[in-house]
Length: 347
Ligand code: SF4
Image (cartoon, rainbow, N blue to C red; front, side, top):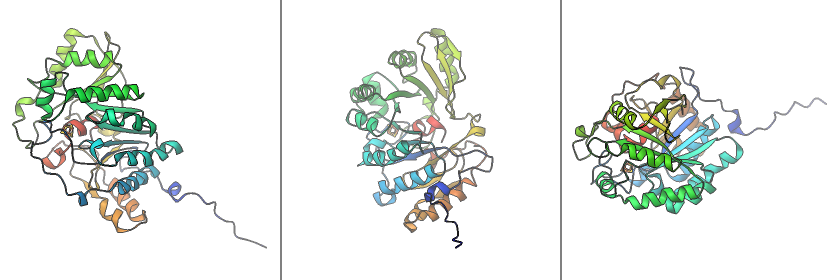
C-alpha cells in the first residue's frame, strides 16, 4: 500500500517568510502606539485642549495582539509599546500578558515600552512578571516646577516614585530627555550625573520646531552639538561603538561610567540599517519616520478572522519601505508622540 506521505504539521505561522524590504533589510523591530491619550500635556507634544480619537477608531487590545503576533511570526524580535502614554490605556496589562507568550516561546526577544513614568509605581512589578526587562522613561528635568511647566499636568514625585518602583522590580531603566533651550539646558549635566548615579543610561533628544502644539516652539530649539560641547567641559566623553540599531549615537562618560546617547532627528545615518516599522493605535503602519508611505492594517484585520489578508497587507507594505527619509516632518507625523517618543527610535 502506497500511502502518500503526510506533510509534517507545523504551525501556520512557522511557514510565513521573514519580512525583508526591497533594500534587503529584515524587519525585526516593531513600535506600536497603543493609545493617543496621555495623562500629561507636554508643551512640545500636545496642546492643552487636545481632542483624541474616537474609541472605535482604535485597535482593540485583541486586535493589537493579533497584529503584533502577525509581525512576530514574520521575524519581529523586538516589540516596543508606546503612546501617548501606553500605561493609561485601560486593560493594557492584558496585552503585555498575552504578548508574553511570544517571549516564552522564544519567538520574541524583547518586549518593552516607552513611558512617562506616571503609572509605573502601579504597574512595574506586573510588567516584570510579563517579561519586560528594560523600559525607557521620558523625563526632561528634576526640578518639580519646571517639570510641571513642561508637562503641564505632570507630578514629578509620581514619576520618581515610578522609577524607584521600576528599579525595585528589577527593570532596567533608560532615561530619555528632550533638550529644551531656556528650560533644562543648564540642568543637563546634573541629569547625566543623576541618571548614571542610579545605573541608568541617558539619551538626549533634540527637539524640532514642529506643528501646532499651542505655543511657539521655535524658541525651544537647542542643538545637541551645543549641549555636547558644554557637557565636555564637565565630563570626559569617550566615543563608543554601542549601537541599538536606532538613531542614537553613544558616548561613555568617563567620570560616571554611564552611557550617554544623542539623538538628532535630522540624522540620516541609521537609515541603511533600519530594521523597524511603526504602527499607530488606529492600525496604520508607517514604514519610515520621514516618508509619507503608510498602509492601513485595520481594514484587513477587521475584514476576517483569518490573518491571511493581514499578512498580505503587511507584505505589500514592507515591499514599499523606502530606502531612507527626507525628513519632511509634518503635523500628521508629529502627533501625538513626536518628538519625544518617535525620535527615540527614529520611527
Ligand atoms: S511627550 Fe509623552 S508624556 Fe508628554 S504629552 Fe506627549 S505622550 Fe504624553
